Amino acid sequence: MAEIDVTQSEADGLLAMEKIRADDKEYEYPTAGVVNIPLVSRDRTESFLLDIRRARLDISKVTYQNRARHVIVLVRVDLNGAPHRNPDGQEVPCPHLHRYREGFADKWADPLPQPPFTNPTDLWQTLQEFLQFCNVTELPTINRGLF
Image 1 (cartoon, rainbow, N blue to C red):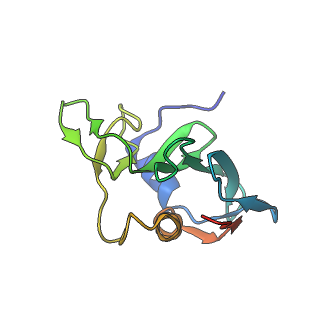
Image 2 (cartoon, rainbow, N blue to C red):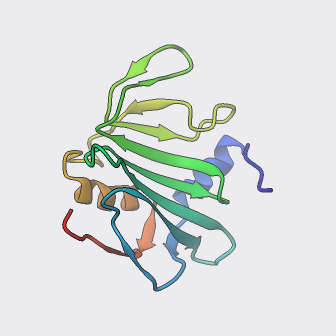
């Protein structure tokens, strides 16, 4: 099994690493549910996943997540969901951004930074900004559908 706990500098390096699509498959932006899209580092030594999750009852509730080694959540954006309570008791409203923090994994959140996220009500634009934030330079093909 992959190592879940990594150092902060390892996690920061994985997030900063250039990522490209792992295949030429076309993916559908979910109307509800989850799609997991494989990504790899340019030299193909690291594997990543882009997760797009959309709630079934409230389709404006969306999560974008970038994982390394299948299990390490590097960064996650939660849109139109519940507030998040950090380990220190501070409540952070939605939208918010989770980043890997050594010793806490993805348990801490901060308000969604603007920039780089310019309009969190536009789910498609926020996905594009999330991909840039995660340093995905060769984008997977994601069909937008009816959104």
